[in-house]
Every structure is written in C-alpha cells, then in structure tokens.
Image (cartoon, rainbow, N blue to C red):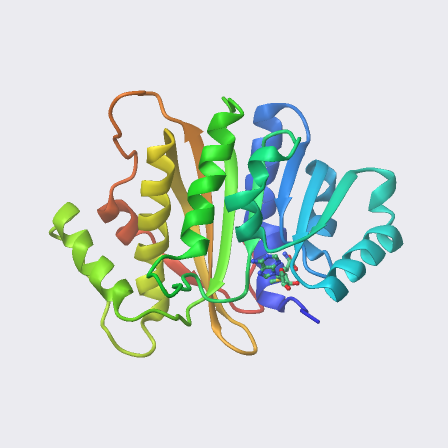
Length: 264
Ligand SMILES: C[S@@+](CC[C@H](N)C(=O)[O-])C[C@H]1O[C@@H](n2cnc3c(N)ncnc32)[C@H](O)[C@@H]1O
C-alpha cells in the first residue's frame, strides 16, 4: 500500500495548500477536486476545508476499497461529495471523461508516483495524451475560470532517447537554454524542463495559458521524485498562442530539494 513520504506531506500541507487557498478565495467557493488520493487520502485530509466535490481515481481494486474506508473513517463523507472510480485515470481521460456528467475541475492532482512518460509500442505516451484530454475536457465544458494542476512523478523513465531528443528540440525555441547533463543525478533537472514543455503545448492547443508556479524535488524510499504546481488560465487570445512564461523563465526557476525539515 502506498504511504506518502514526510517530504511529500510537507509539500502538500505547505505550498500546495497555500496555492489552493488562494484559488478558493479567488473563485469564492470551495473547489472541485479530481485526482489520485491514494489509500490514505492524505491530500484530501489536508485540503478538505477548501474542497467541495471530489472525483477520485484508483487503478487497483484493493486500494480503491481502502480509499472508501478512509473516507468513511475520516468522516469526510459527511461534509464533501465523493465519487471513487476504479480505473486508470489516463485511459479514463482519453476515452471516457467526455461522457461523464461532472462539473469542470478546479484542482487536478495527478500524483502518480511512477515515471512521467511511458511510451507505448507505437511511440506515443498515454500519460501525455491524457494531459491533452484534460485541457480539451475543460475547454469543451466551457470553463472560463483558472484551475490548478499538480503533477508528481518519479524521474525514472521508460523511453528510447525521445526525452533527450525533446530537450535538444527546445533549443530551437530557446537557443540560450541550458540543457542539464546527460548523467545520473541530473534527471530531475531534465524533468523540470520536459514536463512544463509538454504540458504547455497541450494547454495552448486548447487555449489555456499555463504558468509553472513552483517545482520541487525530494527523495522517496525508492526514487527521486519531482512535483510541479501549475496554474492554468483561459487564454486571452483566441488566435495566437503566446506563452506567458518562456522556456528560459522556466529554466531559471529554482527547483527546491525538499527535506523532512522543510517549512515554507
Ligand atoms: C502517490 S499515490 C497518491 C498519494 C496521495 N495523493 C497523497 O497525497 O498521499 C498514487 C495512487 O494512485 C494510484 N495510481 C497511480 N497511477 C494511477 C493511474 N494512472 N490511474 C489510477 N490510479 C493510479 C496508485 O495505485 C496509488 O494508490
């Protein structure tokens, strides 16, 4: 069973919670959550005072049952509305979300734990396709308010050089960008460029401006992890895509290494 690390719990209760409180105040209502709460529902417990509806995904049957138990034991079910769906969130976003009768999401917590990009045999990535579908969903449901997107992944990857190729491609957009060393120990810095790069293009195709608010790294028991907090806003321009934040801006953002004595 997944048990969150102390470092991750600190990020959830400090920076992430602060960002959500700001969004809650801005929208002047509690937030609709969509994400992966895991069996111990640490994120839902931490953020419950700013939440309203929660659409929870869990791919494993046993963990899904534990999520439901945790919800009842915590008594969150008395205050919030829940839907727990036993499915792969990527498959669901790609094939089924468009048929699902739900409000749009104020907060999406894609806290995978696994690698960011898993390529299928045909060279595509369901994870990346599902991010695109998330923006499509928000646009098709005519969402006109900003939303927050958290992505947490390990830095381990399953690609065949595509990531390094993408990093090289970034040089066309930003010739001065510094590409991290291609050596063990630098993977989190590669992810710092790669994940915003992939998400920005998915967002802008659906007319969302994406801002990377912060990015952190920490060591879990099994792997180095990266955590990103984005704010998406409906694009002002319907015709041209102009990113508010350049790749150089992103590359200049500090990636904090979070340890167990972190406080914001
Ligand atoms: C890292 S844990 C979630 C932790 C939680 N958000 C917290 O704050 O403590 C990830 C959970 O999501 C599940 N999961 C991972 N990838 C998934 C996917 N693609 N679809 C559905 N569930 C997934 C895992 O089985 C695990 O229970």
